[in-house]
Image (cartoon, rainbow, N blue to C red; front, side, top):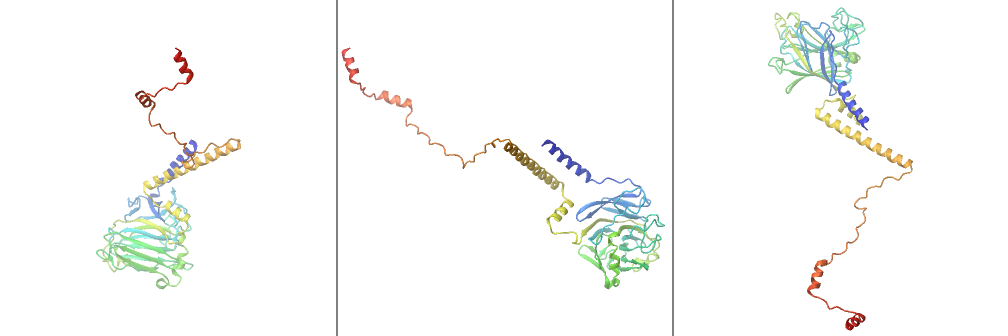
Length: 390
């Protein structure tokens, strides 16, 4: 019994230690980012091939802040050198992605981009980090979904597909309306983006307070089969972020309607945080087992885990005690011994015998009464005859 108790305690301690993710000391990693997947926090590594790009990458729990210049990727392995197996590939067919953006510090001529690319490339590209996109920036092209390309004056959402003829560099893109300082989507404050990936459409929602903008990319807006071709690569996309831009004139494709082309990028900072991937419904089942698994994957307060642990230990100890009792009775029966007497319940007990009635007077009281009222002595005839002769 003591050994079983010790093993249970050791298991709980070991599980709590394993649950803590170890830090990564790789020169390629700027930190670990908490990403919530179906209600549970997972840590992924922020891969920065040019780590310490003038100190332009800051990772703090669920927030990544980018200065001007770097390009980062999310990976699930902490490796010391760039390789094609270190990137994290969420299966977009199953999930709806959401995150929070703070673009207030990024001015005209700049581009804060959060997007998905079909990485890794077939081999190391000219950038030296397996990067590819629809514009062949590093020499190799691949599918690209620009979830966000923005500064505090303009925002654009674009999908780029690639096929046997090459990649669509311009893509199927839309400018976001009512976006900017003091507009309905006020870029001086944080706003939330929600992206729903479907096989035949990508639906992007930008929300702030009670106002939202919805952009739909499907057959009607992008052409027949455009998103279907892109959706075939949903399970091989890597989440990427960058901050770039220089002259205002070169960025007119993004903010030409809102900014003066003579205004150059201010090299400001921007950030994204609270990334979540929630199932569309394909992976969520109504059966008891899947609901139980999802409950364990969620974050709960410490007291919930404490109560659960105490209940689990109590259940385990009770089962062990019952098992030992059964083994004890079985061994007695095998040895021909009678089972121990069972306890008699109150209802099964025999009725007690009727108690004798207490005399009305005690012995002492009876003697007192006799002395006060003496009774005449009755003698037999023989005793009377003898007394007379004397």
